[in-house]
Length: 376
View (cartoon, rainbow, N blue to C red):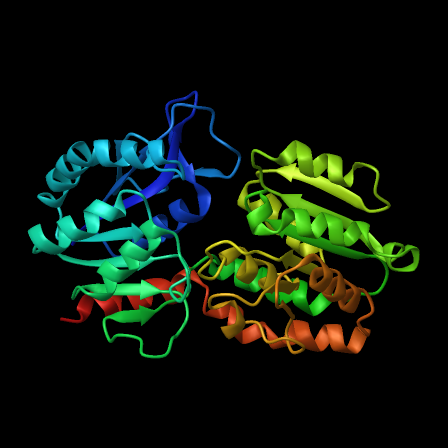
């Protein structure tokens, strides 16, 4: 069986000519290659230097089909997306002729016109992967349109979380992020983890206010001297246009903030291993950020927003801390709880995550995709 994947995943070319793309998506597709004869990935090519979070494909069964980057928040960005529609549809149509089924990864700017195009004009077997917040009350217009269209068509849609009145073609799926080796390493790390001594925290993702980076830094800066003395290092992994602002916020602090930029997966996992808590007080349109599951696998207890499906995996006071409502004061409260947590409770919380992380393995995901494809 041959698969066409359509996404907005950023791709780049290395000096030696190798095509690389955003690591988490590329890894997922590398695993999907186990069950497909060929995979054509239609995605966006950026003619700039590749960030360290990029990875190559590991199978020659995967073919990259480039399209021009499009998308964004401004009106001009929306117009540019519309102008790219004919060329993108032409590319998609040519690839569909070579394949047996497709996966469209949403929400994405091109999804606004590709979902209706595929629904009306393609009879190919296929499914949609919606990675955003399926239950968001006031989503951006583009997200709302795509979610509405996906609810009112017949192909399967994989979504984050389980929701009341969920339609039968909408399937709750975990977003994969862990190999079997990662799971084995996670058991070793969790068994050795304790919160004796200085407490390290970490964040991974886009460095922007909506994701909660400003709240993190300001909350740590507002700790009193006694609480501050308990903090080891606060690791911030990722990048964004406001990184200099965030660095300035943390410059004169008692807290040791370390900005790592983008990191390859192995180095990110080392950050998790050395940290005790993962913190993400986000208000962005999240499904279930896979970095939370990655961190939990390596014994980092989550301090996260109670939005979307996050609260279906993180139970406040049992295997982590939920922040609701999301504001600086509640972030500070959660950090203080983490810093004053008895060792016995910490170890118990870490143990609670043993079964949860297994649902985020690539092996589990691939088996579920095989089941999805076998259904009529």
